[in-house]
Length: 150
Image 1 (tube, rainbow, N blue to C red):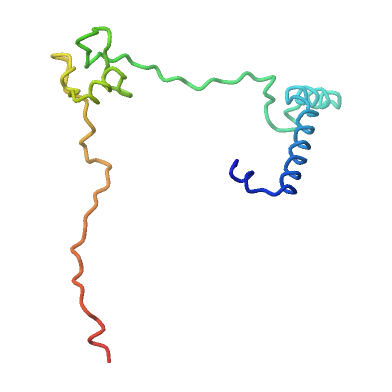
Image 2: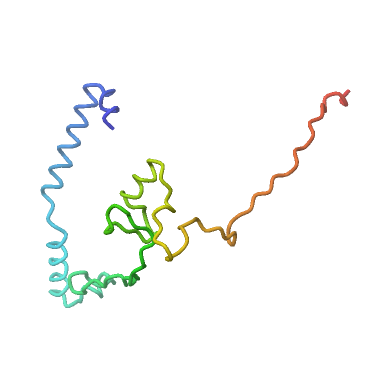
């Protein structure tokens, strides 16, 4: 956006400033949505209607929001441990922790940090179920098709 401003003429910049000032005045003069919502509910009630009858939806101020069902996270045993600091562990799920990522970056292998007897190293899924297979066709021999034309 800033590169567009650098290319604008004085007239274009003036019109942009005027448009921004108009928008700023409009936004500052508006009332909060909660105030407007309260007024609409009272206006509908003054005519003998419930807001649900007029709009057809449940008002947000009257109905509490239902929170999304949270999945219970299961704790998983650690598979990797830092030999220098025993408190640094990793289960093999999620993003690799900094302490392990820095060691791998400096040439060490992730398998070197495995806790003995707790499992195999974390690997990518090797199952081919649900994965697309790509088969390449044999290349078509190139022939000079112009020789056979009259």
